[in-house]
Image (cartoon, rainbow over all chains, first blue to last red; front, side):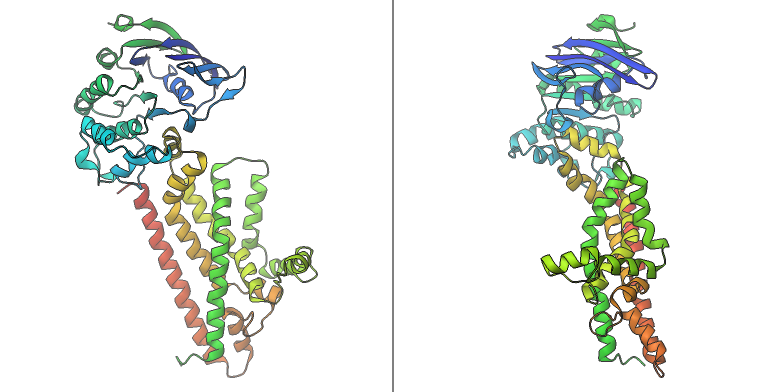
Length: 221
Length: 231
């Protein structure tokens, strides 16, 4: 269960958002500039709320009342950015292994093989990020985040920088991820179709505020 | 003409030793300072920045004299170091290394700082979300990506240290075998009748070393760009 109740002032813009979600994929839906990225940055611990709380399964990550703030690297929350952000000095295999090394997890060949298989990236392991297509890069970024064994996975418009053909290429992987990976996700997008295909619960965000919460019925037709 | 005499060899080897030690000691400090300047905002940052660049614009003889006042036998720091730790800089080759390290510091820091600034901060953020604590982000992402810049800075700093003259001769004088580097040896030879040929030999040696360093630095700078693009 993810509980968010935060407010944050960013220049002129104010975010005041509260929701609690138990869905496998919580869709954070809204136009660009609605505050979606800032909101998940607060969940990730990359941005500190001015006021409020963030908690997962009763575990407090942020509570401004008690000044609790767990830094991003200790939250065990995976993050897939719109622009992949693979490490350019490491090959794909090393990128995938990065989270495991940083969290000092024991090597788990079975899990690694499962994720690599799920995302179809087995043939890319020796390549450098600069030699990958946009879609391949995004799949590797997904794998890298999953292999750090997060308890929650944030996806910030992971299809945002891809053309329609590439989107159609990645979307099935995201559906597989939802159904097979067993990690709850928060999926950010301004695309109602993606939301319908992926999200099990939807948080509608407008100008920094939650305006609707529920199933696919809250999406614009 | 190309018959290098033992005295000249001594000066060349001493110059190399001074420059290598100065560069190796200054590099970790330079990386720390470059990181602070590139990634942190703090009170007095512009003063720190100016202080580092000061040796570049001050007359070298002033820097040398300040070193003598500070690190000389009766200097504030020098007396303490000599009494408590037995470390003496004045009129020793270690003093030449200190002078060269300080004089070359701005040239060492600059490429490192630029290469750290060129690294996409969002990569460091991504490393954080993957569980890397700040110091591991530094060692696993920032430093490897800045490495070509670090090498370029080391090469430039080394070249500057090899050529340093004013601050060194002011601080540690010009003692053959102890503090006489290539530069001060050339200076002495020019003052000596019949010293021209020997001076010319050392001039050629220093040109070769400097050129080699600059070419190496250019090579590392090119590597840096490739590395950041992940090819």
